[in-house]
Length: 320
Image 1: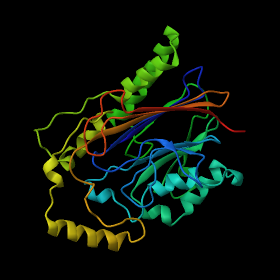
Image 2: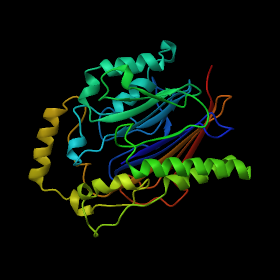
Image 3: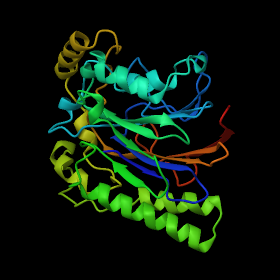
Image 4: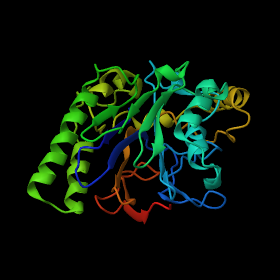
């Protein structure tokens, strides 16, 4: 259950976005990097489990930014759509810089798009740095259902795996309060940017998840994931040891559902150990300077990465 927190509350930064990616730890994911041509203007990590190689969060040299969370379903299987959600994020980030598409026109097209309805439920935060950001869902039926954030100073807003107007999730409310406090404390102490990063990582690492018996599967944990910003490792390795018949059946089913988006299912990436895999922070200043920081907590073999060894940081100025 991912979480995104967006804030304009820091006087020195026009926009701060922080994000936890919660995922099955063996799902193959690239490290953050500038993408190859023809999308070399895009920075972010990529999901390698599906052929789309989409992302859940990224930024461009021209100042486009996007972050996606899925909708909570009653089981992991129900969260899978015909197409990858990542292609929705990609469609905003990878469009040619020369096209000059506005956030409003992109969102308008998405609301009307039949393809957007064919992926699992999601909320997408998208827009341009130093401009208002839209929160759009593929369950939105018209532009009146779009929420705009970062439209003025001193706003902090959380989005997780539920509708944007659902204020019942503890992790969203806790996250907003902690982020606001982290920013206020940083300003009051007149600390540098590295300390701000550490304070924000502290927010993303807040663990209030109730503990169930060891080995409890992820589906059983789902109703509790709304209670914690950070998700420690849950589930069991034994969940990935499926029989050959199970794998064969899943391959046939998925290829029938998604013939254009996935390759052969050598492994099922919707079972096994689950937890917060990546923590990402974007800091943008009014002058267009952007800092993109990402911490990898587990590698693609589900092995813990020592704190700091999985950190990658990028800085650039938005092109005018």
